[in-house]
Length: 134
Image 1 (cartoon, rainbow, N blue to C red):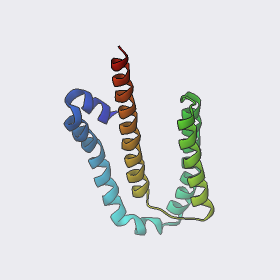
Image 2 (cartoon, one colour):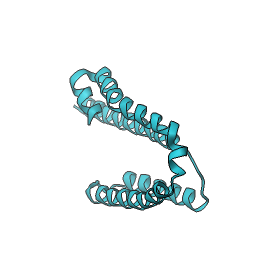
Image 3 (cartoon, one colour):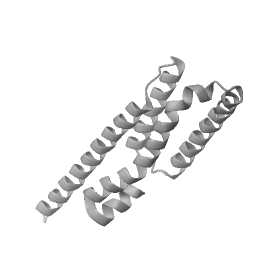
């Protein structure tokens, strides 16, 4: 939401500024927590709590995915993307491949930018084709 509002207020610079303003405080807090995380996780009850939280996180992610599936337009592209993501998640889970979440974020960002660029190119080409026909 911050990125979108920043973009509407001040274009690309606004989107970048708003995104940084939202992300940097969380990043700093998480970084500070990570400095003490190992000692914190050695506490028995904290470890139990995190195991319980993991189950809740899985449920929350699955319920969000179901809501998105119900609300999204069901075209071939969306179904292909959903299928590919599901397969990759399943393979990584079954073979316990551990990939940093940072890589997921970077790859998904690159894919999102590429998909957006392709849709803009297609929209631009269809607009030009419509103008030529007139």
